[in-house]
Image 1 (cartoon, rainbow, N blue to C red):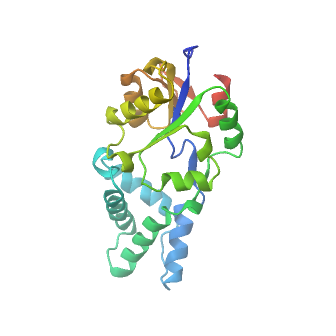
Image 2 (image 1 turned 120 degrees about the vertical axis):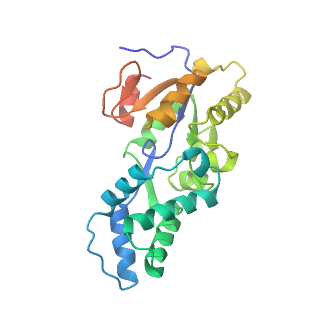
Length: 233
């Protein structure tokens, strides 16, 4: 079993699908919006359609997540592909969905005990965030009553660089060092759910990564869910 560095001083987290998740399925939001403009749709699972679109036309994170405008443009484009129709009415729904996910009440914590988990970790470690997200991230975390747990918040759209670029990890490390000059990269744990964007760059800078995923990956600490973190801390 891989063990954590006993000298861990800070734990950094990805946000999407690690700490927060959509409050409602995109499918229900889309169908509801179509109904509001008196349109019916034969598609019953837009969540599935969207996952296929994003798989076949993946977003380049370093180009997309660096500012709010590029984020909105990339998402609207893929929503329209999922709809299979670029008419004005469908475009209005794509725009609505893009605006919807900016709203704080569109999001929820991943688990009922997320606040309890963060509270326990906060007693012993510096906590922080490195996330590919729009500039509304802090407002969302405040709405969910979890912003106060994080000592640093590094958001791609605010700093102009996105994961997996190692520069965003360096920025986070430097902010931690400003809080505690004794911190080095080996004292930092990073928790994320994307192997390419989270785990690989975290390892390359010297952080100890924890992979939040159900599929077994060798040579990396792995947990199935956020509550499992407490087995290591």
